[in-house]
Each structure stands twice: as C-alpha cells, then as structure tokens.
Amino acid sequence: MGDQFYEDNGYYVARTVLPRSLVRTVGIYAENTIRAYEGKLLRHKTGLLEVNEFVPSTNIVCNSPFNPHLTLPEELSELRTALCDLITADSIGQTLHKLDGVAHYVIAQTILFITAQNTDWHIDGWAVDMDARPHDGHTLWIPLEDMAHTSGIPAVAAWPRKHLVSEESLGIDPTLSVRERYDRYHDTFNKRLLAKSPQVVSAVLRAGDFMVWAPLTPHCSLPPLDPQKTRLSLQVLVRPAKDADATRMTDWFSFLNL
Ligand SMILES: O=C(O)CCC(=O)C(=O)O
Ligand SMILES: [Fe+2]
Image (cartoon, rainbow, N blue to C red; front, side, top):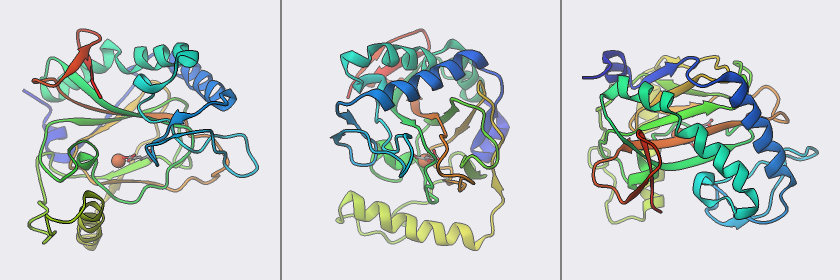
C-alpha cells in the first residue's frame, strides 16, 4: 500500500498538516532563543560545538543547529521540547503512512535552518548511510514561516523513488574517503541529471505545510531573493523503524539513539 505519485516522482507536498499558528509560534520562538544563546551548540556544517555566527550586518544566525531534537542543552530544553512535539505530531505520522503504509518511523536526523542554504543538487541518502543505496526513508522539509518562491526554498527533480544510480555505475573508487566519494558521486551524477534538462519542482509553502522527498530524489535550494532574511525551517530525516536502536516517543515516532 502506498501512494503511486510518490513512488513515481519521489516527492510529495503535504498541505495544512500542522496547526499554522503553532508552527509560526515555534519558528519565532526558535529564532529568538537561538539568537540570544551565547553558549556553543552542535552545528550542521561542521558537526562541531560552536557559538552563533551571523549573516553579515544582521542578527540572523547562519550556522544551523544540528539534531536540535537531541542536542539542545538543558537551558534550551523548552525549545527542544517544542521542536520534538512538532516533529512527532500524529498528523505527520498519518501523512507519511499514506505515502508508504509504514506504522512506525525512526527520526534519524534533524536540522534547524534559520537562513536559506543555497545547497547544490544532491541526494539525502548519503546523510545517513554514507553511501548511495536504496532505502525507504523520507526527508521532511517543514517551513516554520510562510515561504514564497523568493525565500530560497528547496526544489526537486522528479525521480522514481527506488531508482538508484549506484556508485559503481558512476565509476567511483570504493577505497576513497566518504567525503571524496560523496563529491565524486555528485560531480558525475549532477552532470548527468542536468544534461537531461529536468523539470524542477518546488512549491510555495505556508506554515503548516511541508514537503517530502525520497532519499534518492535529487534536490537543491533555489536562491533567496534577499539573503539577509530568515528562512526558518526544519529538515527531518525519517525511516521505517525496523530494528533500529531508538527511543520510542509516540505511537508514530521514535528517535534514533545517536
Ligand atoms: O534547506 C534546503 O534548502 C535544502 C537543504 C538540504 O537539502 C539538505 O540539507 O540536505
Ligand atoms: Fe538535501
């Protein structure tokens, strides 16, 4: 049981799943709380504990907190709880269930983005597996404020959900480091993808909506019109629970123990 559009295209736009005012409140609270925090937090880009960095001449934090659902410190426990409540909402579980029929999911990774990311074309499967392989997870991209086409939102190229382009088929040397394999994979893969002049799909997203894409679905970030604005959003990587080492949070969701 599953959703044929998602199987064929590798993405789905979920509308009005979360309460709009709650999402916006959490977004504002997250921004204010992180901005005011003077200690170190785990950051996505470096994987290190670092203090806030700001977009030049603004007070907008640009180094995204990594796995905030687990790593925000005790002083920020209210924010941690608010984020946990949001990403484990039953309505998200029900939406994913309609896509793939799975009964329980593990949340493997989260990122709190405060600014636009300007990410080049890539697939997210690497973020958990450290290689290109088929698996049945999902990326959830949850705006915490209303987004327009000018906000620097993600865009996908439609891609059959289970369509793997293997490292082997791209001639990637398996003895290289993960970082080198990742870079070489995407250098080659992206050239092939763009040579086909793909249609690029994005969506205006309001607080309460979110976008889902599969681990093998190529996507990028569209450039923001004004990089000195916030683009508050959460990215959540989930997988069917199976036998992962995880802590049960709700009927629908567990957190992978990191
Ligand atoms: O937030 C975005 O613009 C895209 C980020 C993304 O795709 C990623 O971090 O994997
Ligand atoms: Fe991504």
